[in-house]
Image 1 (cartoon, rainbow, N blue to C red):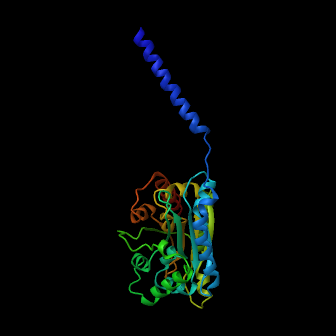
Image 2 (tube, rainbow, N blue to C red):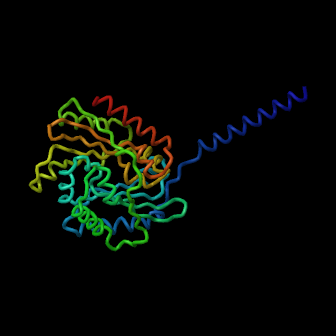
Image 3 (tube, rainbow, N blue to C red):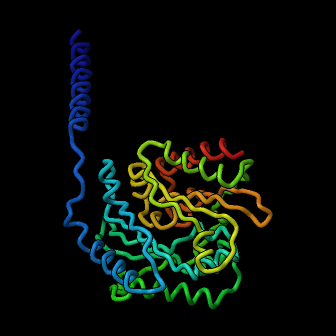
Length: 301
């Protein structure tokens, strides 16, 4: 009888302890990062934006503040900002070689502060990676234009923080392309609606690359890129590696016509991109990829 009472008391104590922990966790409030944490990354982002505005060949598209957006949705992410900018003359030449290069455009610069060592990094993809991923072959002149654009955008930034991402191994292109049974216009409308129908999704931009080319007197097939993302899940996915904010986020869907007028829809395989960044695939990344696969394959197969 004594042993039974002791066992009951132990079980009761464990249950009460469990309920107390649950209660504490349930009542605890999410604390966003203080603005003081953004001083270094903000300063670099402002320098880059000024450089782009001062260069006649460059045009800023948007700045996506992954960290602040994630924190607004209750997902704690260290300072992480993505700057996207055009060199339209260069982009037109690249897209003539392969329309899928649109998935790498506009040109991207990612600034982030590592949460453990507080080290700030400025990263971008080097041209070798782009050339290999999209099978462009040797393009010395285009590579120089690309590097010149990056040098102009990062002028005056402390070189010690610069860390361009080299090719690294990527066994596949990490792209999924679906053939659409619909017209280009209907496919584009469907793809935009898929993005908008997801909870908490922000559409950051929709870029008509055919129009960009037309402004330069170049004829390209129809191709439009949708840039979007859900900051909460995206922030949780990037915790494993903030550099994923360069390749995988925001998410991209490219609706494009080939030379025969057939319509296709292309998006990233995020799990393979995670391999490129040498990080384990976390649950948030798997959920995002699964939702993308389900929505797009159901709509366009």
